[in-house]
Amino acid sequence: MIPFLHLGPLTIPTFGLMVATALFVSAYVLQADFDRRRPQLENIKGYAGTRDEGFLVIGLAGLVGLAGARLYHVLESPSEFFADPWPQLFSRFGFAWFGGFLGGFVALLYLARRLKIPVLEFVDICSPAACVGYAIGRIGCLLSGDGDYGIPTSLPWGMSFPNGVVPTTQRVHPTPLYEFFIWMAIAAILWRMGAKYLREPMSNTPKGEVFSWYLILTGIARFLIEFIRINPRSFFGMSNAQAASLVSVALGVVLLVRIKSHFRVPEKAGAD
Image (tube, rainbow, N blue to C red; front, side, top):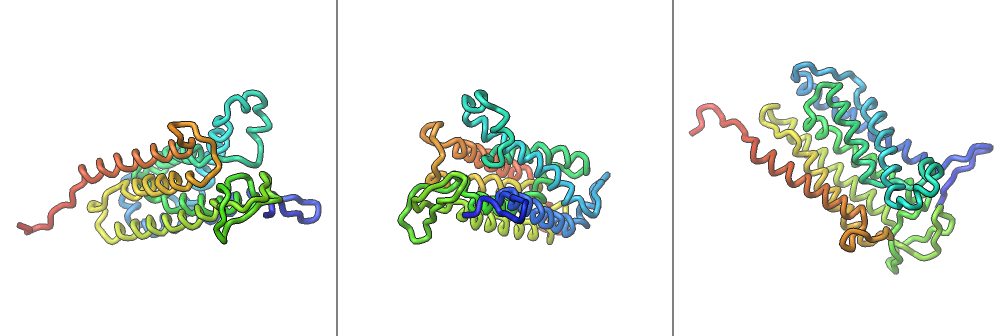
């Protein structure tokens, strides 16, 4: 693996490079989603969007999400953190998915209010881009060999990370690669779901359904991936990420049920 790129006097961590790439690509995906929804958004009373709101959203939510991911990661081992907090806070490695989700979600709530877009519709728009950003960021974990790989395996695609930030000479599951492909597939599913709703009148489309499926699908995916990860177990034999994933799935199911129970497509005029 290649934890660092050396370009003359410059040393560039590949993880940071891929995080920057993830933010850049997800901003384009989000902007494309805003653009295709523009006719519907402009019908929202007080809508305060611009022609580049996707980049604003990713810029702010991405930074807050990274801060949340870092803070959540260091607080998973509180004794180590409080013994020597500053080096851990500002390390270039070690980020927790659920912490990033929480931090980014708080930022999204603020941005939805600022742009005057209903929260559920706003998080629907952001869900495919969030998946794409996460997927590309995982390639940074793979390149740096930062310990996000899985347990030993004899499968032909197993990989070793002798030069990684957290080195191993054993062949292990390349879980960042698994997550890359799974999250890109989820992004495609959510994008097509959004496209289906765009073909319907705005009053006929349930708000929050895309986000509900984002919570459910990504939660299930992360829960399953954790079975072959090397994270320590804490809650009933589960890792912290698995416990957080169950919360994500539960919230997604509850939100989806509430949306389905409250949403009714208006009957067509003249229908029996």
